[in-house]
Each structure stands twice: as structure tokens, then as C-alpha cells.
Amino acid sequence: MKQALTQYLMIALMVVGAYMIGVYKTESEMLKKAAKQTPELQAQQNQPQQDVAPTVVTDEQMKALFEGKGNIVLGKKNAKLLIAEFSDASCPYCHVAAGKNPELNNKIGPQFKMVADGGSYVPAVPEIKKLVEEGKARFVWIYTPGRGNGELATKALYCANEKGKFWEAHDKLYTSEAYDLINDVVKNDVGNSKRLAEFMAPVLSVSEMENCLTSGKYDSRVVEDPKTVLSIGRFGTPTFIFHRTIFEGAQSFDSGMKQVVESVIK
Image (cartoon, rainbow, N blue to C red; front, side, top):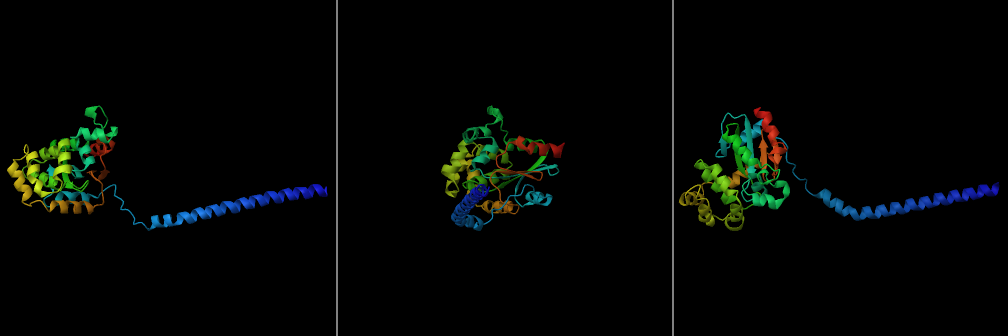
């Protein structure tokens, strides 16, 4: 009996010993691993916190976008629905949302293939244009650097808007030809004003557009517009605000924008 008990105790001690050795080994490995990770984790913790873009704006913030002196504002003053777009004509996803550059839409991905081309994507800008022209919405367009080559194109939009031709200029500047011209040739160089003016000839005469671009009349807009956007938050391009709801990126109009529109103008 004593011998059996002794054997039992020895086996129990061996099991406990093995367990303790395993625990020690595991803890040692975890500590070593943690020690290796610590510099990385510390570096991550020391990174400055990223600004988190808001998902909604206040009524006051939205109204302020329309009251800014010299802003591009279209539509009836008493329209119930307010829409804002933060955009850059050199930005690829701004072109996607504009719906005038199907080649780029298809190149970026099948999710951006437009309904007109057999896909499911509904670009937001043409829908906004309809709402404005039907008197259902008031719209403000504000420049925000995307790819960063759209300053001269932005000035061209302001020049055209001055003559009541914003949409004509917008639709021209968001085509495939314009995308290549803006990013590969014109960029932000005022010395290329004539080249851009020639491209925009169907909208304004070459001399009229060139004179406007070289006059410096709208130089301040490429500085002031981004400041206006930053007063609300940091956003990618494009960003749309419908009523008070923010939609960041080239989201399909059916992704939620349509529902907001219907809730406001029902």
C-alpha cells in the first residue's frame, strides 16, 4: 500500500514539475517576444493621433459653406436640400464621382463601372446636377487638394462660373482628356494657361479664359477653399455633404445619398 502511494506521489510530482517547467518556458518566450515588440509598440504609441473626420456637420457649419464670399454656389436660395462637394479636378476618384470619365471608372475597379456601361455604380455629381436644375437643391463646390495638380483647373472653374457656365466647365474638366492634360501637362503652372484655355474653348473663348487665368483674379481661391474645408475637418477627395450627412470618397449615389435626399425633399 505504502509503495503504491509513494509511486502515486512521485507521478503527481513529476506532472506538477513538468507543468511548472512548461509555464516557465512559455512565460519566458512571451517575455522575450514582448521585449522585441516593445520598441515597435512604443513607436506606434508615440505617433501623433490621426484626425478623425466627422460623419455629420451642424446646420451652422453647412450654412457657412454657402455664405462664404465668392464661393461657387448654384441653385435656388430657398431649396430645402443643401449639398456640398469638396473636390479637385486632378483627383482620380473625383473623376469617378463626376461620371464623365468612364475609362477611368472601369480602370480603377469593377465597383465603379457605371450603370450606363452595364455596371451598378451611380456617380453622385450628375445626380446633384439634376437636383439643382430641378430646383430641389442648392449646391456649393469647394476646392480641396487631392492629387495636387488641380489649382489651374480650379481657377478655370471659377472663371467659367463667373460667366454662368460652371457645369459646362465642370463636365469638360472631368473628362478623360482633361485628366491627362491637367496631371501630365498643365499641372499648377500658370505658364500653361493658354494650353488649358484652348482646351476649354467650347466653354469660353481662348482669350477670355486665358486672360482670367493669368490675371491672378482667383489665385486666392486655391488657398482659401482648403481653409474653409479644414474649418469642418480633414477629408479625402471627393467628399460630399448631403443635408448634414458626410459621404467621404467616390461612393455611389445609391449608397445612402439617395436616402438622405428622399428624406429631405419628400
